[in-house]
Length: 74
Image 1 (cartoon, one colour):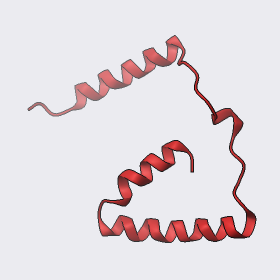
Image 2 (image 1 turned 90 degrees about the vertical axis):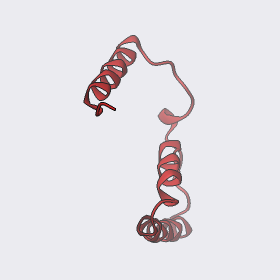
Image 3 (image 1 turned 30 degrees about the vertical axis):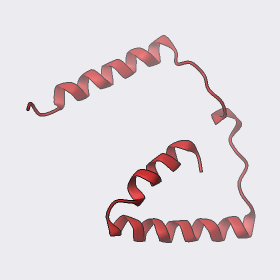
Image 4 (image 1 turned 45 degrees about the vertical axis):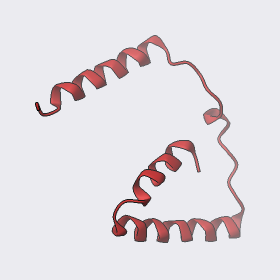
């Protein structure tokens, strides 16, 4: 499982029992496919770390600023 997927499942699996039942079914299907077809190879382009470009950093700041503007006032 890729890091984002692992973090997502980890955060949601321990929530409500509805999520747990859904993820149990999905995980059982995943294990059956891995048993049948073996584990898929990793995507080389997703391996390792790279520094974000200046444009990516600027875009992230815009997203965070927009989210802050939309948050309810205390």
